Image (cartoon, rainbow over all chains, first blue to last red; front, side, top):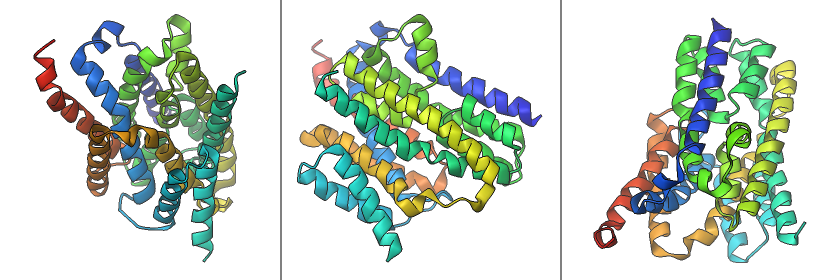
Length: 100
Length: 226
């Protein structure tokens, strides 16, 4: 029974991914769809950041080392630091805050 | 390879490394929720989308049935349909390539390809990120499942903060105009608001609704002309 659920979840999740990739171009060139598709990455990225930084695995909200790291990332981006410096700079800040 | 593409490969591998390592925690969580090592590894191989896998294991650990776990995994996996929708014209995969690429449609591979200017760059970001995460995630799951919870937490290296910073760096160039800025703030607020009341992965889905709503409202004046 557990195996059936594991394989079922796998097949279902794959089909969900494939469905999005298989939507025809002509649907995506309609103005409303194009506008939404343009804003979608902004909304998804912003939401991913918010969840990555402020949520715990248990579904509560916290301000911890990750928030400090995000602030450091904002600072580095304003200084036009390269991508890798921003990413590992933030990781370093989080690790450091947790050591303290 | 042009230097810009080398940069994309390097950045994608960095995100791949930071994310793939998280497979260690999934492996450990999987076996502690009552799955065996093979089932835990099968989830990483077949489901291959982090939030869905953690939700599956979480439901089992909380005493739920495997089918309730699968259902939760599917609900969260619908996020990847949205990603695919946005990626389809950008990546332009057809036939067999699309069948293969579909498995790699996840948070990180989407984030690392959406912001590229050309199809070639988008494909490099997508394949390097998705491919490196697939390999590392599955290896790490296996190791984590074997070792159980005796392994160190990737959090002590700050890797959880690295991923948020990577997404912010990708979002940053798009925040130069008022409309995307409003959408980003609203989406973040909505996601944060949804966290205490929904399962992992759902807040991002709900925030996707902000883009749909703003896209529909913002378009009305120009929409009547076309």
